[in-house]
Image (tube, rainbow over all chains, first blue to last red; front, side, top):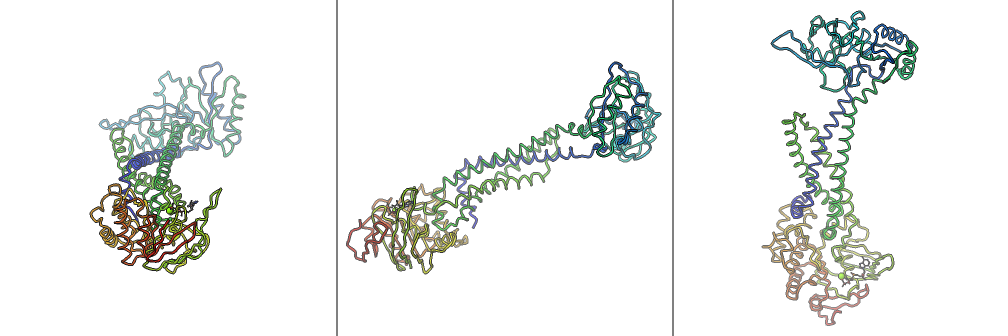
Length: 401
Length: 231
Ligand SMILES: Nc1ncnc2c1ncn2[C@@H]1O[C@H](COP(=O)(O)OP(=O)(O)OP(=O)(O)O)[C@@H](O)[C@H]1O
Ligand SMILES: [Mg+2]
């Protein structure tokens, strides 16, 4: 029934084409498995929840026309008026546009145990008492910042001494104090920790770039401030027009710029990840297409070279199906060898990458689904050429052409 | 055994229609050795192809071993061919990538025999044609006569009731041709029906019966001791 023996012996006598396809199949498996893994990783990154209400937020930045310093009283007045607009849930100031991947970061160290200091990279996010509700954060313990704690000073003055409170995200607290330890009431770098909120991405979306967020009640008078506005559903669009108009009316002596939704910020911040997904997906398609076409070409060539032989086999009693089966089995043998070689190569390369570049190991599941995919690709590519053997007449055996 | 009545076959190309067989009638008894002669283009190969179910015919009736062949599906025809008919071709038609053993094995695999049975039959067939020592050779490593004997072994291994040969000695010198002819006669003496197309009048006369095809029709019958020379 299955002619594996003769097929393998025949291939052995016609190695060149087969070896090319084996190499191509092996490379395809290696590339497809690894690229699919990268695609999935990046997609997981893109799809992670930010922990803030990013679909209902926008921000804008004030720029002075003449002055170079900003008064916190003006900011308080602006925010007060903005909060009164219909459709606004809450508004607060900030040092940056959330999820824009720019902000201020700093090292912080918990030195409670001098033997074992715990350090972390911190996203320092300045805001006021409305920050919690504006971003849509969840308070886990203690309290959020309070209005009277906000200090306004130029960043050239020694600002950090004047900071009166700090709220940590849970991920940062985990890093500095240990998993689920409540740091409320402790001092961090001299600042009293007053509360903990659920983990969230605020200034940055890049994973691993910071360990978490520290919210501080500090207004830098020498930097153009950002206002963050949380809207009711479907209200952001009109508010993105109304709020700048309101600010213009309150004080025409300044400019409003960078009016952006957090959804857009998020979209832009993941641009590299998305282009990676596109690139890798294109690579998978391209490599599969090239290999598929290679298999189509080689199988067509073999079918043509063996027209006479097919006629002979038919004369000796082969059904049309038996001839098709022959070519498909031949394909299974070739892609099978290619897959085995591909698995060995992929594992070897991955092992090297893991050792020397501390990359994540390729999960076996990707290799397995890659094997199935490449195998199906091969079968699919061989199907059309194999099918064409139906048209070859058995009389080819007697009519010598 | 083989019974053809009013068979006709027309090959149509865009410009011409060739009547390769017209009103063709023939009965062949079980165990006969029939030689077929006739001028080139007369329809000899066409007759063999139809007899061997390699080609369909347009009109008429063909009974093979009591089975009416016309309505059969392609796979039923393949099965019948595989079980009842052995082919020997002028150009040997061994599969170049397979050694002699694997070549003889081809029809047996399509027959669905098990490993042991196939091996037994291959050994027996190669023994019969005197090639037992050459089973690992590729066709290209054998002489013309040896290749034709290997092809005969392949046709015999399935123990067909019918052996159809299209100029089996056409590519061989006279000594080798005689050897092959002797082999066919020996096979026939064991009960296999043989129909052989040939251009060689001497070989044609060694058969029990010679039929001559001219212009797609059976022109002449010759008895066992026929004297008329084939064209
Ligand atoms: N596939 C085909 N298409 C068109 N015409 C064909 C085809 N096969 C055979 N013929 C024609 O049918 C006629 C009979 O051909 P056939 O091969 O049966 O002759 P033959 O007696 O075997 O000749 P030869 O002794 O040269 O082998 C010829 O005229 C040939 O040209
Ligand atoms: Mg002929």
